[in-house]
Image (cartoon, rainbow, N blue to C red; front, side):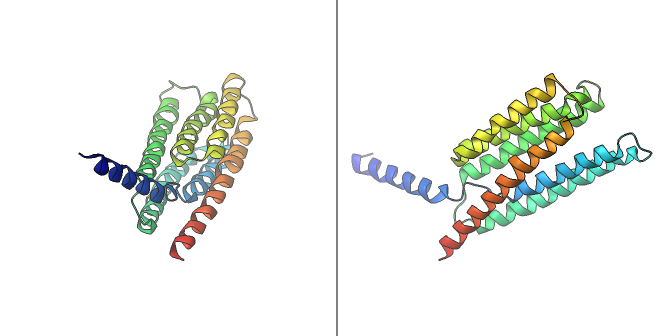
Length: 200
C-alpha cells in the first residue's frame, strides 16, 4: 500500500464517521416508551401490592415486557429505514440496551422470584443497570450531557440499596421521568431535525 492509498483510506474512514455521526443517536422514542411503560408498571405495583388483585402484577409486567419489546423492535426497524447509512455505533447502542434488559430479567425478575435478590434492593439494582446503559450510550453517541446523567442514576441507586424505604418507588418513577423520558424527548427532537435537514 502506497502513502497515497493510505491517505485516501483514512480520508474515506473519516468521511464515513462524519456521515454516520448524526445518525448514531437513537431517536429517543425508545427512552420515552420504556420510561412510560416502566413507570406505569411501578405505579401498578404501588396500587396493587397488598390488595386482593396483587396476583395481577405478573400479567401486568408480562404485557409491559412483551408489548414494549414489540414496539421497540418496530421503532428500531423504522429508524433503520430512515437512516441514510447503517450506523455501527447505533447497532452497539441497541446491543447495550439488550444486554441491560437481560440484566433486568436475570437479576430482578428471576433473582427476586428465586429469593436470591432481596426485593427491597430491586429499585437500586435497576437504577445501577440503567446507569450503565446510559453511560455507554452517551459514550457511543458522543453525548456528554447524557452520559453525565448516569452518575445521578448510580447515586440514587446507591442510596436506595444502602437505605431502602417507602421513598424508593416514587424516587425511581421521578428518575424515569427526569432522566429517561425528558432526555428521550430532547433526543427525538434533535433526531427529527437531523432528518429534515438531510432531506432538505
